[in-house]
Length: 175
Ligand SMILES: CC(C)(COP(=O)(O)OP(=O)(O)OC[C@H]1O[C@@H](n2cnc3c(N)ncnc32)[C@H](O)[C@@H]1OP(=O)(O)O)[C@@H](O)C(=O)NCCC(=O)NCCS
Image (cartoon, rainbow, N blue to C red; front, side, top):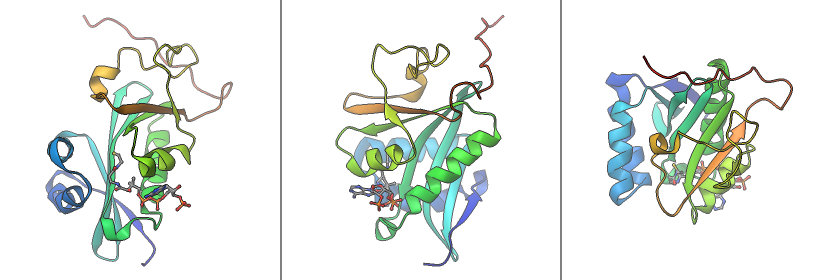
């Protein structure tokens, strides 16, 4: 494998990611991943030579709050750190956009995905924990945007340790 390159998949290039998604998901997840691919604001790709071998789908859910909707790697490229490369790229993307908290969801029996996110500091979030504005990681008001379903674990990480972070602006009602 040559050194991986991270690329931005703009709208006209996103169809290139469909084979990776077909390789990575089945059933409703495959349908939802393909739908998200066409609608989400940011899709990043990992390229080996001229081959797209993995993708991530990223969104800002609120000011300072990011969400990794999907990370997927072609089967024959798994366990070669492509997922790690994509997650590091995603966190870099969020940092560059002044994101403080990043969330992701994983099926509770998806050990590969859970280990990948935990390797970069993500931890499971308790249902009753303090909200992300109060110092916890509770995703109050945001869960419906994340479409977390039964059987999935919500994970989160604070990108900057306490004391170094920029204050999150409070939510204002829409006028
Ligand atoms: C989850 C996924 C993206 C990981 O991609 P990957 O390129 O294989 O991951 P990496 O090689 O970077 O592995 C990083 C770490 O994750 C863990 N990991 C990866 N695959 C694993 C597996 N099959 N079983 C257990 N742990 C695993 C390991 O801790 C690994 O570190 P190590 O190799 O030093 O032990 C990939 O398995 C995938 O595309 N799965 C299908 C789609 C999916 O479920 N996506 C996640 C939810 S959106």
